[in-house]
Image (cartoon, rainbow, N blue to C red):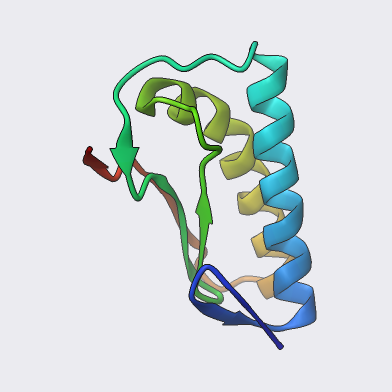
Amino acid sequence: MEIKNGHYLFEDELAIVTQAEKIWYDEWVRLGMKDEGTCCLGKGIHIRSPFKAFIRSQAGQGNISAWESSRAVLDYLGDALLDFQGTKPVSVWYDDGRID
């Protein structure tokens, strides 16, 4: 078990979160590493089911850039968590945080 962004994660959960972070960074780079929008505190992706985790956006991304680059991660997590959990509901969403 390891702590990541304030949540204890088992090895298989940590692998999903680590891959999601990589996808988010790679997508941001692919989109030109833009910094559009407002600087916000706490923007990221929440996972609430099947386990709890929080994935932070890259530093230097405004809220518009973070939202645009998060779409690939949300698609990945929808598939990965469904495979991880089977038929139970998956709860994942992007949160803009609050204006800094």
